[in-house]
Length: 307
Ligand SMILES: Nc1ncnc2c1ncn2[C@@H]1O[C@H](COP(=O)(O)OP(=O)(O)OP(=O)(O)O)[C@@H](O)[C@H]1O
Ligand SMILES: [Mg+2]
Image (cartoon, rainbow, N blue to C red; front, side, top):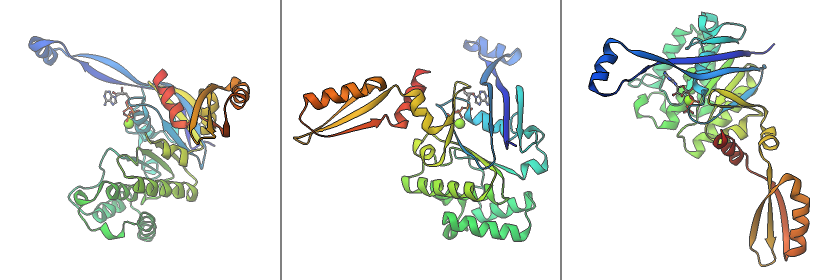
């Protein structure tokens, strides 16, 4: 049975439409006009136990809105959402104990307290048994190498240390389902790969499911076999990451290295590769030749640009 099932989910936000000028502002106060903005438009997908799915798309595509709806923070406008066979919006205790939403852009720890205090607060909120709490805390802190900063005020931590502490806080209760919304945003390369490694291990050792959004393609390429691409509230692609290349890239790259050591590259339609290769070999003093796929980053950039 899937861990997450989303059917025809639509979510619109009601926003206030502003009238022009001072008189308009006054009228807005007395008689506001509202309009609906559709953030996600009829999306459907399901996620099986053990999956780590990349949920990617340009700014404003609807990723955070989807993750918030799946966590029960937002009520769907229409359609149905089931997570661990529950309706997230009911926010039952048993549901909240089995999920976690981590937002890289938002601080969920107490700013003026050391992280360790936020952790014990979460122990109480989730009524985590003492032995489980101790075990999880130890494992998480070791994996993320956070031991030396647990008693430092959160406001004094570096961005990467804070993000790791956010992860610890979010995972102490052993959630089965994780929604990770840009967990590596703003981190340096080393921290990014540490957090990535951590996510990979968590996924391997827990048979729930993880949905991950990121604007860094390296995260997606490293972690996700499957991606769901969303743009302007609609799903453009749902399948293997490797399939993105064949579906969206009409071209391959031929790279030739000439005998004088210089390199030339040609972007060639898939159907013309053999022909073009033969012609290059006949025409040029070539010492080596490579045929490469367009980088996945570039393809996804193209897909987004087209929309
Ligand atoms: N609270 C809100 N009220 C009104 N509109 C909103 C609200 N939150 C988001 N939106 C709009 O809904 C759309 C989807 O936003 P969302 O935050 O889900 O995008 P996203 O894919 O997470 O983007 P990003 O990559 O920038 O984080 C955007 O057009 C956004 O402006
Ligand atoms: Mg977002």
